[in-house]
Amino acid sequence: MKIYIKLLTIIGLTTLLAGCLDMTEPQRMYYINAVGVDFEDNEYVVYLQIINFADVAKSIQTSTDVAPAEVGRATGKTIEEAIYKLYRSLDQEVFWGHMRYLVFSERVMENEHIIPVIDTFIRFRDTRYQIWVYCTKNPVNEVLLVTPILRNSLSSSKLSNPINPTEQETFIEPKDLRDIIIGLNEPSHEVTIPYVSIKEDWQTAEEQLEETYFSGVGILSKDGFKGFLQDNAARGNQWMHNRTKRGEITVQINANRDEALTASIEKIHIDVKPLVKKEIVTFEVELKINATINGFRGKISEQELKHQISTEIKKEIQQTFQEGLTLDVDIFRLSEFLYRDNVKTWKRLEKDGKIPLDEHSISKINVEVAKINPGRKTFSETIQE
Image (cartoon, rainbow, N blue to C red):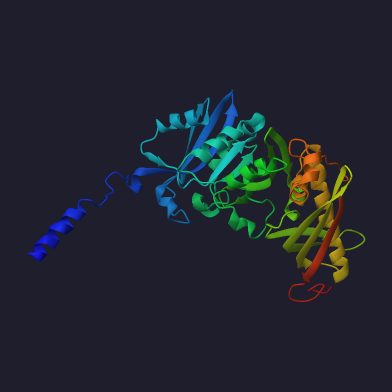
């Protein structure tokens, strides 16, 4: 009798268990990996990049018969309207939980068009704050259709996962939606967004290959787009934060300036100190780094090499700061350093979150090369002539 009662109890309890009959099978869904947004003719243009389901669980594409991704396009007065138009052309339900990055065109960054787009994706319950954000001058759909080197999976490309490439060189610091929101809400209410271009630096025996390339930064403020800093103009940015894993600096090593040396820069520690004198605020920058020597010709002492590296890094910091001033941009967020250190002075001087800056605002840059690793041998040529 007891066994009979227990059996009835178990059967009764199983009827209360939740099932998964209302869940969509994974193979019957489309997976959004990236979204591109443009703006033309007073309408948003939305590009959805859907990756092959078989591509999600693999790091390398083995089949050349199946496209690694397809990109859909639609327009609308709002970002949501354009997305809903794309829903009408899809055969399966769309899953947004694996979305990895957003690409904005130059036009959508102008005149505050980007703000509603950011707001849309942070409010949608299926997306996350850890979505990477990029900007470009190239056609957005072309950026989304670039296939990674060796036909690598799009889910592991540099745009989908920018952390891996920055371990070797952090020329441009990756930014996600959370960073963008914080940057726009905190002084100076300006934020840098990695600028992506397309280059043909790679090739196979049959063809020249296109690959995405971090070319600099675009600067966005609450009031709209400020402009781009590209290539050499953006180099100083990597030395002004502690998140740079590794960078490179090339210096001349003799008086004739016909011999060069490239050093890898690591273990960067930056400290910015605001100095207030009545109504004028200046900033002193203290930078501590380690360097590793790569191959070179000629002779140079350790002390001379430290001086050359220090001088070149100072030059790059000053150049990027000056380029920022021409765009009316506080590129190093000096206003925030004052805000954290002396909020009373910041409140007295700020206008729209920024304090007045000019070419003399950085009064001192001290670069200390704490350690130089000469590699396997010494500060002399490996092969003597």
